[in-house]
Amino acid sequence: MSLPSDLKSNFPLLSQTINGHQIVYLDSAASSQKPDVVIETMNHYYRTINANVHRGAYEIAAQATEAMEQARAKLATFIGASSANEIVFTKNATESFNLIARSWGGQNLGPNDVVLISDMEHHANIVPWQILSAEKGFEVRWIPLTPDGHLDLSQLDRLLNGVKMVSVTAMSNVLGTLNPIREIADKAHSVGALMAVDGSQYVPHLPTDVVELGADLLCFTGHKMCGPTGIGVLWGRAELLDAMPPFLGGGEMILDVRRDGFTPNELPHKFEAGTPPIAEIIGLGAAVDFLDSLGMSEVRQHEIDLTNYALRVLNDRYGEEITIHGPSNASERGGVLSIQYRDVHPHDLSQVLDQRGICIRAGHHCAKPLMRELGVGATARASLYVYNDQADIDALAESLAPAGELFAR
Amino acid sequence: MSGLEDLYKEIILDHYRSPRHRGELDSPPAHKTEGFNPLCGDEVLLTFALEDDIIQELLISGQGCSISQASASMMSAAVQGKSVEEVRKLTRQFKAMMSIHEESIGAEDPPSEDDKPFELGDLEALKGVVKFPVRIKCATLSWNTLLTGLDELEV
Ligand SMILES: Cc1ncc(COP(=O)(O)O)c(C=O)c1O
Image (cartoon, rainbow over all chains, first blue to last red):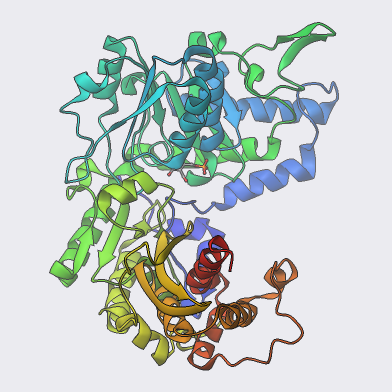
């Protein structure tokens, strides 16, 4: 089975023209487009059952609560969690990491401890640790890269010395590299460390099972998986989340408040202070249904096929003139293509492509330590998702040469 | 939406392909200032020699897109041999040209009443950048870096 060929028609934004060209959207690693059903589900919520959740006894409040909790259950199933109570809603993956660092890290990290991350992390999985480390004095240690864009795990045993938490991305948002999370998790567990995983680029694109991954904690973000912005997820094993102190304080997250203190609520509400983004949660539930209807194995296969096509077309046409960072084998990577074309600066390349309605991203992609390792200030990144097809790749390939004529030195 | 030719004028491409005053002076004695555009990773490194309030020589290194490189190159050509006061005035005028409405409201250093109208010469070619708001920071990077450098020297 493969994905339906008319999938683009489910995404209203993709029928637009930009600068006189049909839009070619190649920036899903930054944020994906939304299918009609997600937009309509959120509309429907506001038009028919909008009410605050959890406290109202009246009909629409009950329906809103029910819809939100159904979405939680869908997410749990989607990633193979054993209970919906292990799904904590946050604002985005960034907040999920801040939650882990503040709550778990605040309780468990001190001067002689180490948190092990990697050279290909997004700032969301770097800076929260650095902020906390400045207070608590633990070490943030880095797994280096191999020249072909994999994690260099040859020294992992040595690097794990003194480590209490390993926090690594399942897929790089710059190189596309898929990391051997299970292998790293097993080693982490063997020294008594926890394994946190950045699933921001993984969960939207591959079948995900937290048990198979060997993860203790998983962070991901709704807007990269056909869902709305403003909604992210932290999954954690129930015993672990239970033992962690609350993150933000306020309404919803308490069972009782007295003058002399408070009693935190049970999972998952303990970590969900204040009125949640109800429409966004329900919208994300619709996105999960949408992805389920496509089948995540089919999604993955589609992206392998299209990544292979892109690598072949770009390399055949441009040969020595083009460098595509990261693994050269599509089975080891996702559909994220960081391109260096001649000496054209990524900003200039994306500007020229924009004139043809092609959306790619130029910049450091919130991964500055990785940029330094690659020895570049920025890359031009084209990234793929369910709605992309060979015609999108062809449009990209066609447009590099004219940019080269203008800018190559 | 404007066409690319508004942005990438021939003179801009010329400065990009053959940048003027590239390199680094020994510092000290020269003063050295670095600027970054956190959005796109562009970096500029200025070294300049100041004597009697005159910029005797200014060299540029770093990396960036055509707009940031061309703007830096044009700036380097424009400020050699000029007094600090003249340079500050030129910078004000350049930044005024680069400011879209929202930015000019909050501008810390607006052009003063007696700044004469533009005498920007080649720099006027960068005017088209204003139509591409995300690129404005590329064009102003080297100028802001120079201002920082002058401020550091308290001149
Ligand atoms: C690998 C990775 N981690 C974390 C994030 C952060 O996601 P968000 O900005 O939605 O918190 C992103 C996306 O920008 C990402 O690509």
